[in-house]
Image 1 (tube, helix red, strand yellow):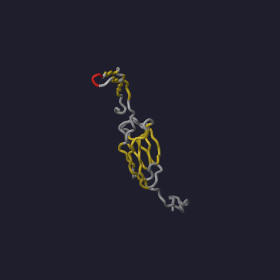
Image 2 (image 1 turned 180 degrees about the vertical axis):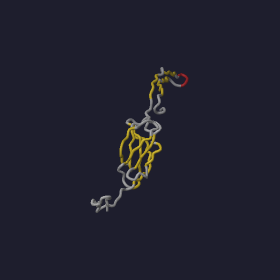
Image 3 (image 1 turned 90 degrees about the vertical axis):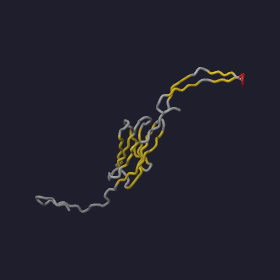
Image 4 (image 1 turned 135 degrees about the horizontal axis):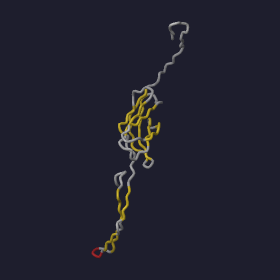
Length: 153
């Protein structure tokens, strides 16, 4: 098996041995050649990070050095797929915003997928999102009887 994604020449010929010992007669057929290539599996996402400082969302970003064997990316939070994104050019910084994160720290992973070669290896990082305010504001009032100001209480 050759290196994936590169053409290689493969050859076959028949081999025949008749007899044994000194009386053995060996013959080979003409070699027949063909060109083939091994498919390449998706690369591992590089420089993958999940943010800890976005409050109500988590920014997941990564890059790849090759798109050979790559059809798309799957972004997961705690092993649950969140979205599938198309690949771009090699070296492109890919980004995904989890705009509905669960509060607290969670494992985010990204893996490349190939229609022909299944899933590639994952790159993972913990990301955290802060919870929204939990208090409820009540009894809000604004004055409407002052000439130069509005008083909000």
